[in-house]
Amino acid sequence: MIVTIDGPAGSGKSTTARRAAFRLGYVYLDTGAMYRAVALAFLRAGAEATSEGATAVLPSTDIDVRYEADGMHVFLNGQDVTDDLRTAEVGGVVSQISTLAPVRTHMVDEQRRIGHEKAEAHGGVVLDGRDTGTVVFPDADVKIFMVADLDERARRRKQEYEEAGQQISLEEVRAEIEERDRRDRNRDIAPLRRAEDAILLDTTDRTIAEQVAFVVDHVKARFPQGT
Ligand code: DC
Image 1 (cartoon, rainbow, N blue to C red):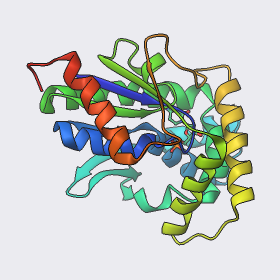
Image 2: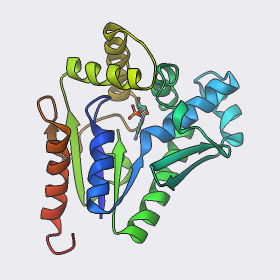
Image 3: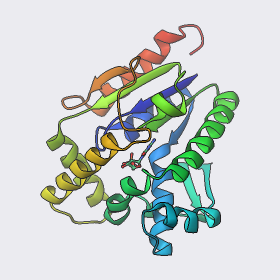
Image 4: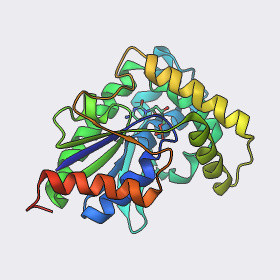
């Protein structure tokens, strides 16, 4: 069973996908974290978000995903960078870096490999991102497209930053999200868009528990005997 959840920043994808995967006994794959790890590699190398930058950075960049008791961890060249990915610094450059063709090709290959492997071993995988239902797994069993009002998304993302110990104004977060949405939707390769067969889920007025139940119910309805 392959479940994809796509949508703009702050729509609630990650939390919902992680919890739905847990409830279903599936594995959660956060594809945004993989792009963030590549962005961190660019930042550390002081490289520009250009194809020349990609040529310089990618050959020496190894992104690995491992699962530990508390969930998915991302390793950059053998170092666990999970706690360094949700920062404003990475958030500021990741959408530019994720427009680069060599970056996307490499990530999509890895996501397909991990997705198939985990679905086989655990019965299912829940991926979240921007193109998981359109490009990574266009034949996914269940596809969800999550949306929410911009103000609500900015409020959620601000809270996330605060929980990570970063103080940033609502206006700044709002501007960052708006800019990221614009880039994610307008890029040439794999832009953020709803797959025709994706179910729309507006989370503006929904609690996390309701969002999780929505996803779990759709998966169970797809294969009533298997879950
Ligand atoms: O979901 P997130 O905020 O962690 O994603 C970070 C960035 O990664 C986002 O701005 C766009 C990019 N991304 C992507 O291009 N494709 C994906 N499948 C997931 C994320």
